[in-house]
Amino acid sequence: MRWEYKTLVVDNQAHSSLDLGLTMLGAAGWELQCATPVDRFGERSRLFFKRAAVDTTAASLEAVESDSVAARLPQ
Image (tube, rainbow, N blue to C red):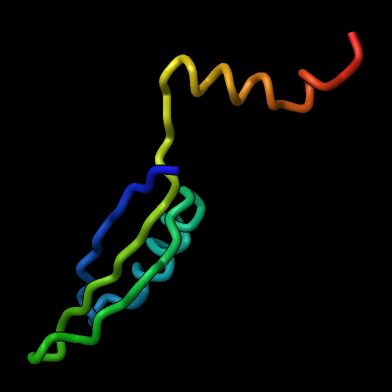
């Protein structure tokens, strides 16, 4: 399995929009892996996310289709 990674620099003064942004990332399949402490000025921290990469090659799509529930139903 391949992974995609994302780094988010967070301004610790913007709490209201942070909750909504994290919820949207989670809905898109991103998982929080690590959070660094705030920087020495106490203003920013970094959040690191990962999610499974979507493989759009023809072979991969055929494998997904052949493993689907519909493919297992009697014809």
